[in-house]
Length: 276
Image (tube, rainbow, N blue to C red):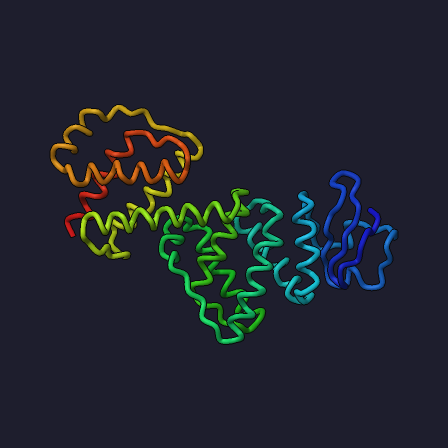
């Protein structure tokens, strides 16, 4: 490969015969190197491809204000995540998670508090990613000697899930907001305050996430619950009507049809919660 640009002592850009432009990282890999010189992959601790032009520019800009030590720590962090999940994470995590954690740690050192109102819902939705985020926070504490607050674990979880699924983090956030909006509608309609640690709430949130995934991927179940739907409509009219209200909110936000069978499942969840 030929060196195209030396970004700093530990990161450089090279032209690869198959992947075109690649990022090579490794301790001292860029020190004393000149543009146009040849370099072997054996010299790099790792390499990755930023396929999109926008991501390439974002990463280059990132390196201008993030110190080399932190870049090295984050590359090691991403290595640990890939080994844990046994997959290659989408390359956008190099930009997204590095940028996010750099500024988060900066705010922590300035004594600013980090709050995350969606922490519990994030843990319920992505338990494996959440467990990995907890491990990363402990590891960063040892590496950088900084205590990262628990609220930050939720944000790291979303970045990990985004890199695993190649879904935009803004889309994942929108779904979390949608669920919280529906929970608020439930509390207002049933005139209850839901205990976030209640098992029925945990089941409801997991159901919402699974339902959203099915709607997005258009994996609709067969609607063969007409008899049960009529029974529930007669027995629990308030919960049944509320279920349809929630379905309409989902349809409006996701801009996709939500199958009627969803009303059956939601009515049962709502009935359990209404007993509070």
